[in-house]
Amino acid sequence: MKTNNKTAFITGGNRGLGFETARELGEQGVHVVLGARDLASGEAAAGRLQEKGISAAAIRFDVLKPEDHQAAYAYFDQHHGRLDILVNNAGFLYKPESAFNGDTPVNHTSTASPEILKQTFDINFFAPVALTQTLLPLIRKSPAGRIVNLSSILGSLTLHADPASPIYHMKTLAYDASKAALNVFTIHLAHELRDTNIKVNSAHPGWVKTELGGPNAPMEVSEGGKTSAQLATLPANGPTGGFFHLGQRLPW
Image 1: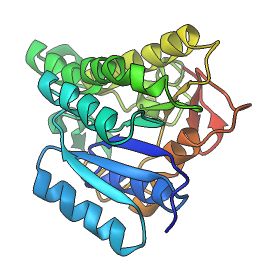
Image 2: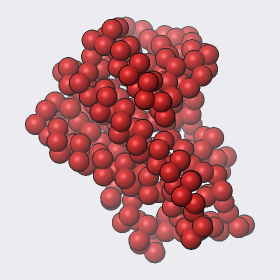
Image 3: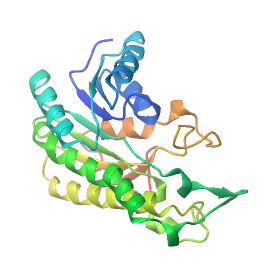
Image 4: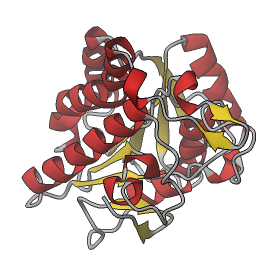
């Protein structure tokens, strides 16, 4: 497949939502680079994309290692001279937080430990902020830079406070708070970059049958990358500083 000269970096791109985002972008001619903690897994995933005619590569990347952030900068600077698309996809949900008592979600807010809060924020908030700041000089070199932060509808304070909303009973403090914080980063960075050609948006991929989403999710894995891919390829008149699912704006 011919490329359109755009390059994308997808963290956690070797499986789940990250892999599907890479596939969606690759099918549009974007050269996709998968960040994976295990390089062999990343290269295997890139190989599966290449078999579909997609231009793909992989680098070893752990969002929690600052040295990997610097290595990613060096890689894109050396091989491409810029970065067109950054998808902050890697994320973490502490499984006991999403426990159910029968069909009823269990709210563990009063017992959420500082350790779990810190671990969740390190992966879901501090790491993508640090990586974006590291790679931003390369994104500024793109004629149409796009930053996509993988959020979740569970980061919507408006919907969490509404007894009539579908997520009212889905209270997972560490995860929800980290995604709400990531949404704040989206708003603030988009404001700072409002006079540039860079667009920054948050994506809710939907409830998808991934390792994180579980087998009861209504959306298939193949659908999970659509929102991120849409935001990663927005036209010049597209939105910035928003929160979206499949083209629909979500409340903060």
